[in-house]
Image 1 (cartoon, helix red, strand yellow):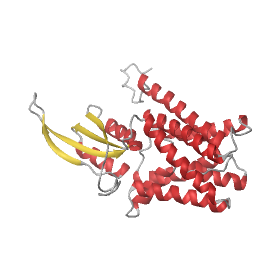
Image 2 (spheres, rainbow, N blue to C red):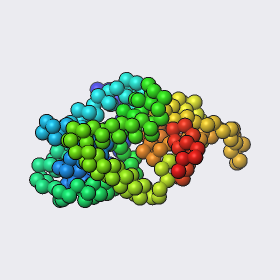
Image 3 (cartoon, one colour):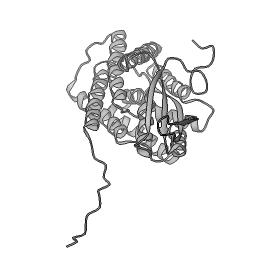
Image 4 (cartoon, rainbow, N blue to C red):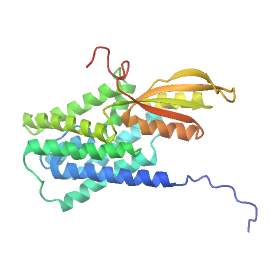
Length: 296
């Protein structure tokens, strides 16, 4: 028997904060799934994203939407890992898989939509999806989908992540109108996208769509490289000095979208757990990857 002192386990422990995050992600994903099964999917409203594309295919093939979402997300995950490296956290995988599972489980229980009025379905489906996604973002989770495709498209084109995401979602919405031969369904889907966006903003406390992060760290170079590779965002380096210690430190300034905030935190935590991070809301951001000057 080996009596030598055992080495400290390197298996990451799940703390109270992580448990709270997983509970919040579960609640958010469940609300999103309800919105899809109660309102959007049965009324053929494909409001972009992996769920929108899966809704279109579902009404053509009768295959389960959750299964189709898995089939859409897995290639995107693999392509992203090959392009950007292994940066997907457990919470991202958890949220993505759980949403697909709950959509199919709830579909077995929910036999009829709450309404067959497409306008009501678009409005209430957007509210449910927005509240659910807002909770998921707030507890540091994501649900995968077309934001991964948008980052891949940005890597091989001149489009920003935001524009690539808009391009992909609009293509799915237009595709739904063409496939279903009902252009008005595309108009209803646009209403859902708008309502979802506003509901997400409400849950995330305010209408600020971007986050500015100040990061004080000893591992500035590694964090800069990781953020650029994973998120495709640039970082400005500011020379700083601790007033008490007199130690020179680098301060990193990075602006990200609200959905990228949790990934930025995970990147910093994985590289330098002792880093000092300040994240604040940014009401307006002009420049590459965000709004152009003169935009309203």
